[in-house]
Length: 229
Image (cartoon, rainbow, N blue to C red; front, side, top):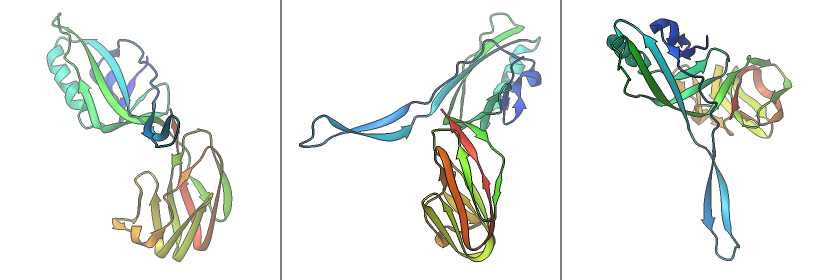
């Protein structure tokens, strides 16, 4: 039976509910901005990212205490951050924890049918194994969507990391620093390191990506997360 997991906990056996139908496979849509340019024929159109994705799931169940169970389900969904189906390891991140639970159909006291509407980030994510480099190497991104990555840099003093043409320089490293391309932040524990970093936050392009270290960098760990439309 197909199950739905929120933050890696299945909602189906927890409340004895089933999916009324398999959900559609959503696709994020590109967003463009158009400008009128004097002296130019037509409009100047600029790619402006991808839109969030609406995602609907319909459930039903039979329970002698259908109404209290429904309230428990609504409470369970509050604050969830990730959702995935049991037939795939890929998951979606819920945007700002937006989960709308529609009114339940309760025509028969022991039966309940309801739909939830979720707004997720544009992509379906796939976590990959962490890569470790003490020199240089290649990482292949199989998706045509750029994938922000998290790099743990280990060393002391001035450390350098290069991802393709992006040269990242860190000064005053004491043991390790994390460069988070997803959150656009550099830190060590609870201490920000953004003022000690130059370069762009790292991401991997489609295909081969060259990674190299220099300076006082001993080694790096790269946490990868592929993005799929």
